[in-house]
Image 1 (cartoon, rainbow, N blue to C red):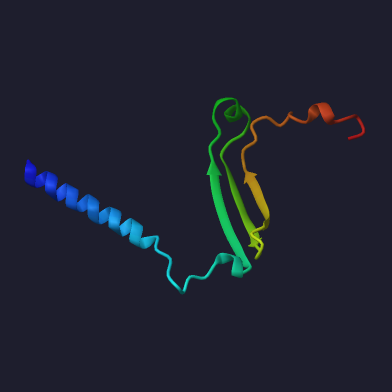
Image 2: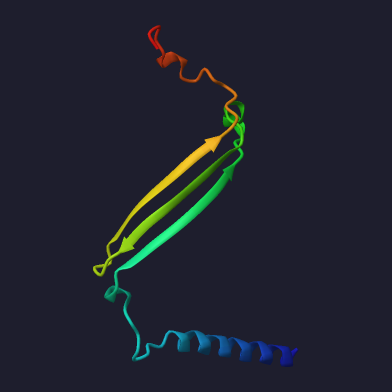
Length: 103
């Protein structure tokens, strides 16, 4: 039992040393505030509605993307867009109260 405890203590000390050593600042550190950083992401999602939404809509998909920039002053600007589509709309009378006899 004592041997297992000593091994665990040694492992714990080595792990703590590794964590503190990893945070040590080197002379060659480059700050992220020195650069303007562009970021591009893409995403895809598939949804299966449940509860009340399941009665109205079926399975649908979503495709989108983001373009963002972090400037040298640490400000973050971005634009995101998504396109949602699906085949099944189980209730087609959702917007009937907006229709008039003229269309």
